[in-house]
Length: 281
Image (tube, rainbow, N blue to C red; front, side, top):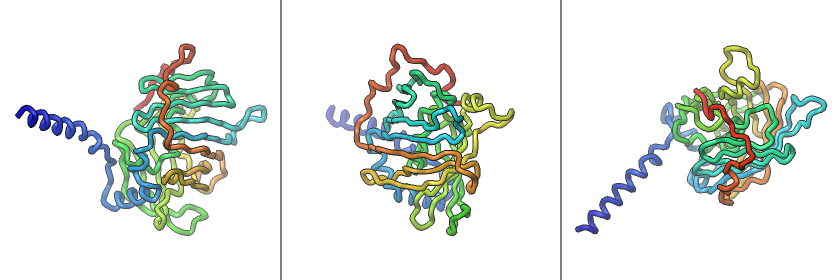
């Protein structure tokens, strides 16, 4: 009898613990939106394989078209993100700098870039993993419409992605993405993004009353399959879908099998702690 009660209690506990994971689903505007988004996720390798990765690491290289003549025009970072906790450590070798997020606080060493360190923690993680991020809890996905991207003959599905709360460190509830999906392959072709994180807005000196940086447009020019998952590994940024290119990006050395090194996300004694809000309304 005692054994039966213990077994029943364990089953009940397991069901309770499973509820958050079962509830961690996006909100779809309708069945058609769900069909398109799930087809896109499958086209990129599926959600189960992505969630099973212990960590995702890559080298992120950006050419900054706005760099001055006396400035180094490349941003180079080695980024590692734990899939379960979304803890982060980053090395910036060209700047002799580091950034970390240990699950509670953001810290940096020798961070000299204009962007606040907290805004960089999950910035490119979202771009690299955007197809699967659609499956995070709190994601809201709009009705699908059709959009013609200049220079592409075939119309693309257009779905707006918003959030019921700030989705990650360095982000705001005002953040959004607009996804453009090929109706035949269901690959993500490009997207718009906008960031409303207040410390970033303040640093960028945007006009008074402007609540988000952007939208900026991204067009994907290269994909790479890594252990069954299809990642966007080259893309460029424009202020309009047919505007001049203001940023070129490469994602290199993708690895989804190496476990996260938690000691590297812990704040060193001589690091600077980010004292602003980690997310904003």
